[in-house]
Amino acid sequence: MRWSRFFAYTLKEAPKDAVVASHKYLVRGGYIKQVAAGIYDFAPLGKMVLDNIRNIIKEEMDKAGAQEVMLSFVTPYELWEETGRAKKYGDELLRIEDRKGQKFVLSPTNEESVVDLVRGTIKSYKQLPVNLYQINLKFRDEARPRFGLLRGREFIMKDAYSFHATREDLDREFNLMQETYEKIFERMGLDFRVVEADSGAIGGSGSREFMVLADTGEDDIVVCSECNYAANIEVATRKHEKRENPVKTEVIEEVYTPDKKSIEEVCEFLGIDPYFSIKAVAKKAIYDDGKEEVVVFFVRGTDSLEETKAKNAIGALELVDASEEELEKAGLVPGFIGPFGLPFDVKYVIDDDLRMAEELVCGANKKDYHIKGAGLLDANLLGNLTIYRDIAAVKEGDKCPKCGAPLRITKGIEVGHIFKLGTVYSEPMNATFLDENGKAKPFIMGCYGIGVSRLIAAAIEQNHDDKGIVWPKEIAPFVVDIIVGDVKKTEQLEFAEKLYEDLQKAGVKVMLDDRAERFGPKIADFELVGFPVGVIVGKKLKDGKVEVRDRKTGEKFEVEAGEAFEKVM
Ligand code: ATP
Ligand code: MG
Ligand code: MG
Ligand code: MG
Image 1 (cartoon, rainbow, N blue to C red):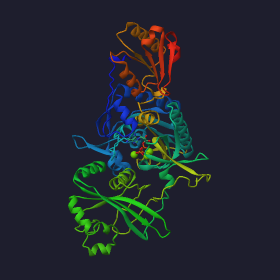
Image 2: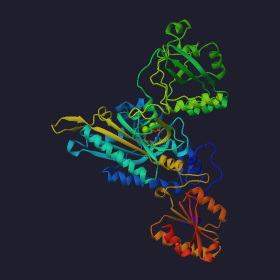
Image 3: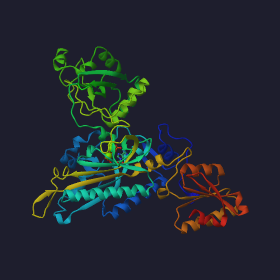
Image 4: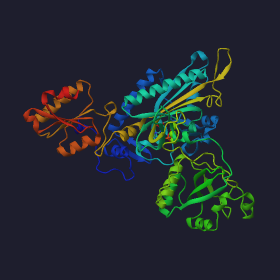
């Protein structure tokens, strides 16, 4: 590719909301452009990296015997009703309606679609197992789209779904997929860990995540210093026990959204209409065994901030923990909290909301709280405070549950997730096959996801410096960038053109920077865009020399012009 004819551009400024390196450099390097919150266009460079990752995934999935399909992006709502996920999935599911009033969803994941594809078409155990995958668009109306491609609303996922006649066969495929994922991430040159994980909204039992290690990761992972135990902190922490009736609860922090502007911001985070008043409360619960838990929750109402403040001043919030009699005495309708019976609702706090709460509580008061884990408040808040999750998180140095050695906690970016689903989708959807005895049985399923577009950003989080991206060779859009020092000097241009053609013929992905630009900005672009190797054809060509630069180490080598080809091959 010749830069002079290539649709590439670089920007001096990163977007204001860009806080992580990948977001800044992808935008500044001309890889992506934001269209709306969490929605991006891919410029040619971005599309090239995406395709490189796609190809690695496709090669390894095909090798493992999976078959590529393409499932519709717009999926009938009815299918989601069959499994009950239409309701359960929550606000991330974008529901739409066509002109005839038929309801659809934009696929955030495709279990329903794929079950619909195989039911009635796979009839016998003899046609099993089958693993179907696609590399396709997904939409999740994330409460907080952020960090560029790391958490988009529209993004590309590789999702695979396997169908089996027996549990044993599912176990075999699950292990095969784990090996396949390991190969994929190794080929991409990533430092990652496989961790025990929670099954989340997808459901089922048994799941593992693939975490790219990076300080900017949103997941805390627990790694043993001795054995191979590694788990998402959510899993390591959770006890699944329902704890009730704390001996004492105390509010340790309350935060009003301080002004109208931030109310709007908070509403945007929460995905609710602006002009609601919001209050974040961190509350500590103390149990009879001395255990303490911190729960963060929101109180929001349809009235103004002033009204809310007024209500809270007379103790409305304290009524969260009030007994039913106390509420009745205060003239409250059960199900509502607030002295005037207004529909305050307390949102239970999970994952993203918790992070936001943490920011609200800590940010507004400039305090360094560390609220770990997630508190799930019972929907019925009119009685006792009920907490379903144990908040006291695993700490650095605790007992490895497997070998007892001290644990380390580190940050990871979830780039892949594999699940043993069993029959949680096939059963409600009535998707069955005939077993050896001619008996109808629901398919036993597995599902396997990779965040394809997220991987672009994850790779950068792990491979960058203060000048820009440092691509691993396997996924770089171009491996070699030939920079012509001065295009007006015919000998420089001619030499560079020849080298460019030779490398291209040899199958090297090469860019020729033949722009009529000064040398400085060209080098800056080489560093920002992140090509692994630079060849500078400049003044020294007169003495028969060119310079080769290693983007990663920053090393510069002066080489004989005639040897440039061999040196970069
Ligand atoms: P997260 O915990 O980051 O929200 P998830 O657990 O909800 O991810 P899965 O349902 O396991 O995601 O989807 C499979 C993969 O899709 C994830 O491992 C991740 O790499 C990718 N993915 C999920 N959500 C997003 C998103 N909003 N933007 C980009 N990639 C995503
Ligand atoms: Mg998610
Ligand atoms: Mg997750
Ligand atoms: Mg996941």
